Length: 256
Image 1: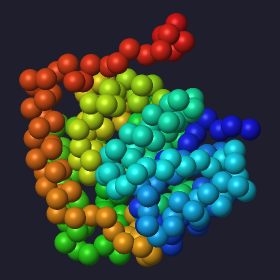
Image 2 (image 1 turned 90 degrees about the horizontal axis):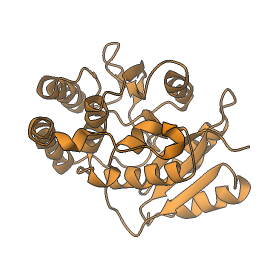
Image 3 (image 1 turned 90 degrees about the vertical axis):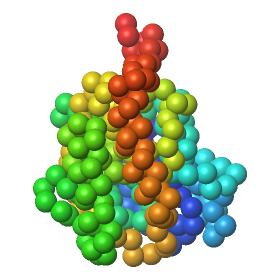
Image 4 (image 1 turned 180 degrees about the vertical axis):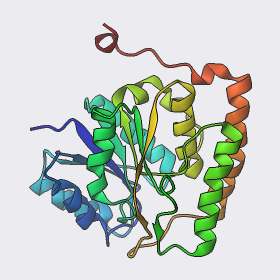
């Protein structure tokens, strides 16, 4: 039976993790989650592993194969569009490397399904600093980046750069996905800020974030500086380009 919830996992060279992370999602029994892998033509064979698993779970696992490495934001936009076309009600972002605990998918989905949230964020900072095995410099950079986002935007989300997020379908239908600008961590800020400006309710669910053990991090300085200047641009747009934050009309069946 088709689930109402899908977990989007973008991948680039994740052969060490991909089989285990998919199995971890499929093994959750309290609620069924389907999986969509968005793979950017990983040269290490990640896509081939997913194809093998699809043969075993054709109704639960799907893959979008893209021509090359195009950025985290565009991967999620492609996944959002696919998920909307396939009529999922709860659409979740999650990393492939087990930094996001799969068991927390249940709480994120429930926050949106029954807890009054339109957007549920798996938050590292809502109950202190819950990060394991990060270098101190990166942890401080991430923590103060979120504080910087709150200061500039006025948004109260404590983990604005978080990539473990559940959206209700209506939120993604209301945002003009083709107008989303940023590709790196600023993408995560842009999506939350846009939902906030549109009046959607954002709630944070505490998680413990564990740094990847296998594979290679995709973080680099250009992604960080995109987020730094992107926050200022988002704030200016909210003042001078308010049309950007007007909700898109929903399909007729949802407005009746």
